[in-house]
Length: 132
Image 1 (cartoon, rainbow, N blue to C red):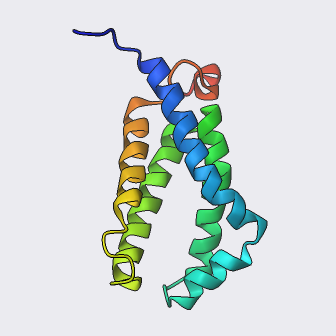
Image 2: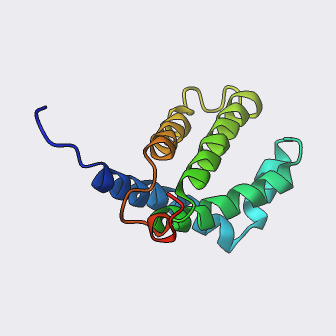
């Protein structure tokens, strides 16, 4: 082995980084929830308003939970599912407008999957509560 492994540090860094990324998406949506609702409804996506609200809440509150290491694996799986949904949305409803624009969603999904598999690490609320 070239370097020792530090899975707890990796989990902490990963949680903070992905949480911060989602927080920067969720906060502006939460400040004016009508914008994401209007956008998604305008595309004709079934259940657009509900999805916009759920994704906004996940991106804001889920991001905070991830940063703190609270329900880490559950939140990470929800982010994986959200990013799969947004990738499908982009390819079906935004067809042609963002050619190749789904890579970031896929990267976020894979990042969240790594955290779901890695777990919250030692420095987390999950560990303090004994649920990790």
